[in-house]
Image 1 (cartoon, rainbow, N blue to C red):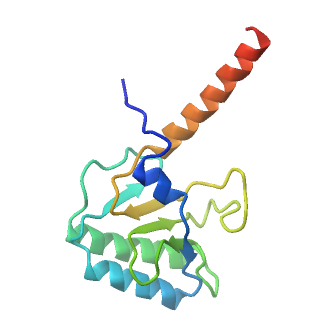
Image 2 (cartoon, rainbow, N blue to C red):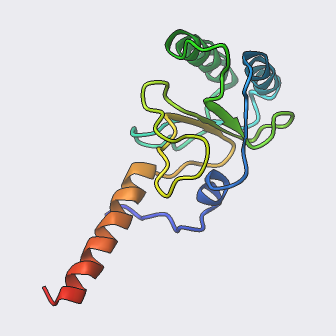
Image 3 (tube, rainbow, N blue to C red):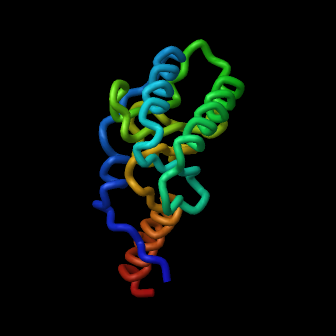
Length: 150
């Protein structure tokens, strides 16, 4: 049986925290540079939808990921602006949300059900976000059935 993370786990609190978009590609370049400078600081690379990593990535893996994800973003998000990478701090990043250019939905602005990022780079151990969303929906459904007496 899998232990479900608490809604107030440090990772979930950080995920719901305040973020700034790297609006210009040059801002994203700066974020990548800052990440390279502290690549050995215990970063987790989480591809949302895959099992969360249980250990931080190596500095080499961080560097390789930056090269690959940057190429993917520039190839698939062919805009004059970036705007699909959100960082808790542009100058001292600790949590980075990268949205999939092919699944943007309502990334910016307000939404009751914003899309999950495609990838997260964090110094906090990630939790299984799709499983959490499924559990929340299942709890809602069970409450609804109980109210109807089923």
